[in-house]
Image 1 (cartoon, rainbow, N blue to C red):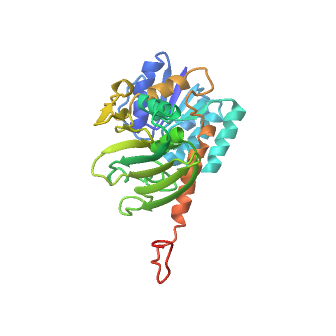
Image 2: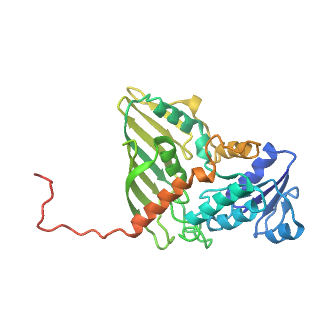
Image 3: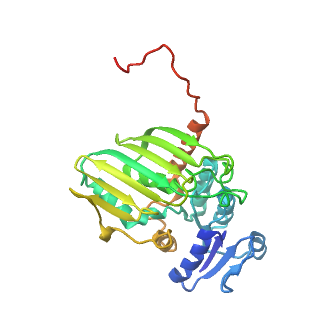
Length: 334
């Protein structure tokens, strides 16, 4: 089995470590312009060499900069290769639709990586909500307080709308996915963003209020302005109780008792590297003969998240400046 990884950033290298443990007899290729010390058992190649020598692959994993995902994915899908794309799978809605059509035509997998769906804590929270264990949900509070410094954004593509997007598209997309995955589609939202132009073009702080179709209200707050990676959490208030999943990758499931909060260790995981166990589970399913993902990772099942992101950015872009109302009362105080 031939497997290729495009892009050996931190996540690409993570896959390079995982794949030999999952598919021991595979021949693993990689494409990356930066020269680095890589184990000789992995084979460096290029798009030109693949075309020239007609090298055939069973699976491709796209870990290149976000703005290149479409181009690189299209190359392999068009060659009949099952393709797995890191988040965000593409930035442009038209590109997403083109990949969906092409993958259906070529009859190959085209999945995206939303690994937190496999977390024990996430699955337990989803189960508790579906079974109404804490009754009717009143409010959901989602937070992500992380750090990404100037050096992180200085590589030429990060933090730009054309090639990456801001905190919503890059870091907080997993949190947004969890919100929709657990609590359902969105009916209405309002959003505000803040920008540090010395650091990046796109937003590095975003506040969103959602009203879901099931009438659940949720608050979404994400930033990379913190001085370190503090927390990621989804806090759920129900009529009969409160649940929290937290941890750097939403890996800890917690219940509130009468007097204190208690971690459910049976449904929690320790993520020493911050990446967790989800990528390994994604790869196992992706490398299997099954065409359908158990967690709906097919990109046609995740177009909705991309549409939400575009809708939020459109609202932020057209935001009317605040004007103080003079000599005209509202209903307040009536």
